Length: 310
Image 1: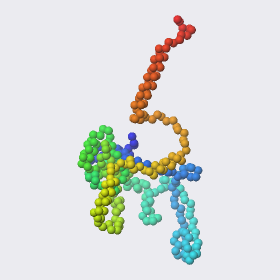
Image 2: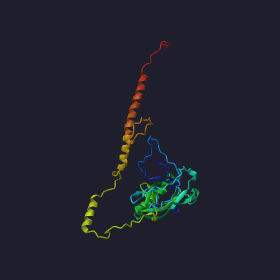
Image 3: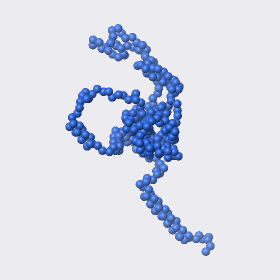
Image 4: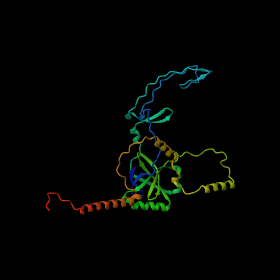
């Protein structure tokens, strides 16, 4: 059973059902660590940017604005000289939050100031309204989580799930996770529910791109041929048909470069369901053979030793 990322309750007016959230998607991106030439792991440290001392641009190089060679009348001009002090490692306690308001200009805030502005923590998924499942454009959807009820609350959870499925509705709700308040959509999904975090309206970039002849009306023949192509390629959606080929190739290349590693003995794995009958039959045969040996030994007369009475 995976670990719940959040525990609390689902609140629909006066109806409150304790629930847990479990990740519904586990990305399998192939990630690499950085190594040096000797194969040792490279770690990153926090350093402050070196302070660059001001320098003067020569009068005869008015086009020069940044350090670097500038050609003028086929003559290479000299570089301005400046000194930079070495980068210094910054300890975690000294790091502040900085928001860039202009190039190179930051508004600084302490961690305490940022934490004071975080939403108040609570354990409630507060439903505000219900909408048609098809009413929300997928562009608003982000991360997905399974909503699972506590065992003793499965009955009211089932009622809500089936009622929402019958009405073809999903809930729009708020909940707080890790000091952030999320707008979410909750809909029935199999025997559980699926909670999807959403982006806000002002985070969606408008698709106001200029397309030439966008208002041109296609001909009926063009539409018929396009519809024929769509119908020809139509079919049920089967996610298994679309594996991540890039990840598969990466893992194959990694496996080919992996040296053979001596296997470490592990505890026996649970018997697979498909092999259960075979395992039972083998166990019965072994048990019968062991019992037969015991019975045979019990019936075999024991030879007397010389000291025993006749």
